[in-house]
Image (tube, rainbow, N blue to C red; front, side, top):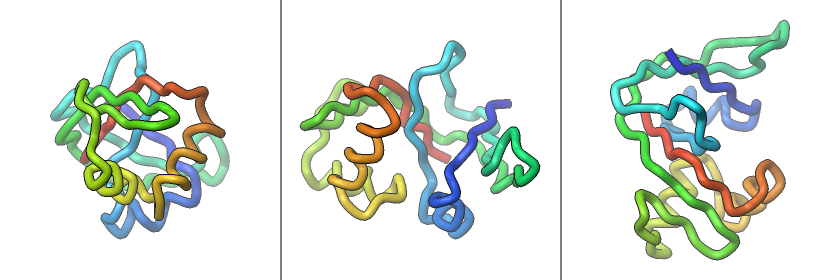
Length: 115
C-alpha cells in the first residue's frame, strides 16, 4: 500500500485528473502495476490531506539526464518528451528539467508511476 506525497503545486492538477503520473527515485520495493496508490499532500504535518486512492496502471524504469529522457531503456522523441512533461504537470521541458535538477542530482534513475 504505497503512499505518495505531493508538493502543493501539484494538488490542483492531481485533483482535476490532469496529472496522472509521478516520477520518483527507485525505492527498495519498487512500485508495481496494480498496486493501490494513496496520494497525499502535507504528509507528516498537521495539514496532511489525502488527494485520492488510485490503482497503478504502469510502473516504468526512467532515466532523466541533462539532455534526454529514457523510459524502459528507450530514448523519448521530442514529441514524446513534451507529452511526458505535460502529463507530469509541467508547462515546458525547461521547467521539468529545472525541477528535477533542483530536487535530485542528475542523472535521476527511478520510476515513472502512472495511475
